[in-house]
Length: 464
Image (cartoon, rainbow, N blue to C red; front, side, top):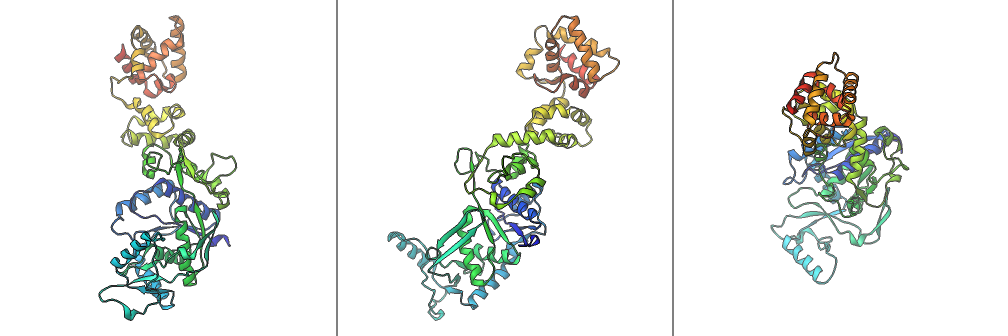
């Protein structure tokens, strides 16, 4: 296959947010297309009109945009193509590969109940497969069903799962067009994938049986069947099916929790795919290395601790201006806030300790806090006892400094501690508490510089 012939697609239903499993599916499709120099397309499967919403469509596109997984062409909306789907159903009728079924809902319910009572598989029994339309009951609009083969086997040569075989006697004559003339999911997907020239259908393995049914539609139409690749689903760290408590959340929730998109992408690509022992790599490397042959057949396990550690790595690597903007947004600061230079000046120290943007913003909050500072319990203890006398002396030393930079403040405080015969910690710890309201912070001399002379002295005064 020529490189340019590869076309993949991500086809979400707009009935909710872009969940993390869907994001991984989109990523695998995007990577495969990029690796082969092909195209990655988006299709919104909005045929379920009652459950589809514009809010969900917006949320899905927003999540994909945040991750950088935009399609290479304008997205296709499945509902808008209903006439084309009905046209193909008519083609199948004309070729004898489909037929009209006039069974009423009550009749089909009775059929299923009888099958259950007899311990038989519940499936359509083909009662209208060979009947003439002249037998049709009055007032019952027909559905159109595929005339599927009743013997033999359908084999899916899956690029991840290997050959998967289905007995055709287990695949009944599925409905292509409902009685109201609307197409079913099975027909719509086949027609859209064909018309969009999709070469590889990469999706979750919960669609594996759909691949068998869709293959029969392709064959009835005489169309080429795309390469199927069914990815195992994501499980929680405990091995159970992924739920909200494991992390089955929308991509927007991960952004809100303070994860960077590059960390989420790096983590997702390693859920079910591997490249040796490599854990941290760029998207450029992922594009170069990605292939379906390295996708595992077993479920992968979602682990928040690993994601947090990975996110911490990307925070430390991230541009300080970018992180300052993210922190400012979290803290509700205007783009021209006077506090931004303080945050930027201290970012190297702040990001060393944080694993998420939320933690980063929490640790930077003292830079914009109103005086007097609210102190945590440990900080309150540090400024108790004889600490006010120590701080009063430090305040006088700092106020007299000719220069206000990290080296000068450090030298003066060390000299002060030696003069008072105090360990540096006995001076630095109360000073940290007075300046930040916490017992933890970046280097105290960097904090002094970030706050500036006036604010630093005022905060010390509050404790003295």
